[in-house]
Image (cartoon, rainbow, N blue to C red):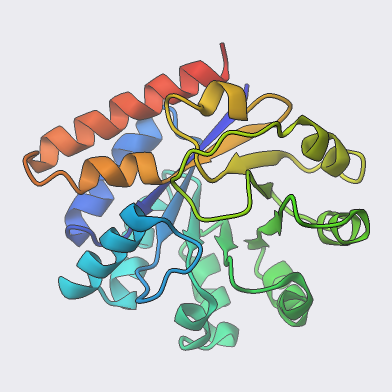
Length: 246
C-alpha cells in the first residue's frame, strides 16, 4: 500500500479548524500529516502555500498554537512538523525536541536545513525518537545522494523537480528514483507538484506521495464554509489515495 502524506498550514484559518481538518484527514486514509509552521518567507513553497502562510500570520498564528494542535492530533494521526529552521531554532532545539516527543510528534521536515548542518542535531533527534526527514533532489550527485540517504529515517522526501511546490511540472522520475533506491531501503515519497491529476504518474517507482498545494487551494476558497472545506479535503485525500494504489 503506497502512502499519502498531507500538508496543511497550522492555524489557518484558525486553530480549532486545523484540529478538525487534521483528524478528518487521518480518518480518510491520510497516512501522515504535515503541520506547516507559518513563516514570513517560505522559500521552498509555491504561491498557494505562501499565501496561506501569510494569512495565518496575519490572523495571529503563534508557535504555541502549533503545540496545541499537535497535542490534539498527534496521538491519533502520524504527525510531522514542516517548517523553516529559524521557527524551530528560536524555540531552543534542546528544549523543543523533548517537548515534541512528549506531544508524540514523529518527525520534522526542515527544507532549509542542509544535511551537513543537520548533523549537529543528529543525536538530539535520535534520543527523542523524532525523524529529521532527509531531502534529495535531481540536482544531487551520486555521492551526495548516498551520503544523505544512508541514515535516512521514516521516509525520504524526493523533490520531484528543481523549483517550488505546487507547479505540477511533469518529468520522468524513474532514473532518479532508481538511483536513490540503490543506496537505501528507507521508503521514498515524492513531493512537489503532486495533485489528483499527477499523483498516479508521480508515484511510479516510489513508496508514497506528499501533497500540499492541492489541499491549501481548498482552504483558500473563501466561498466555502469550514465544513465544506473539510469535506472537499477529505474527498481529495480519498481520490489521491485510490489513484496511487490503483
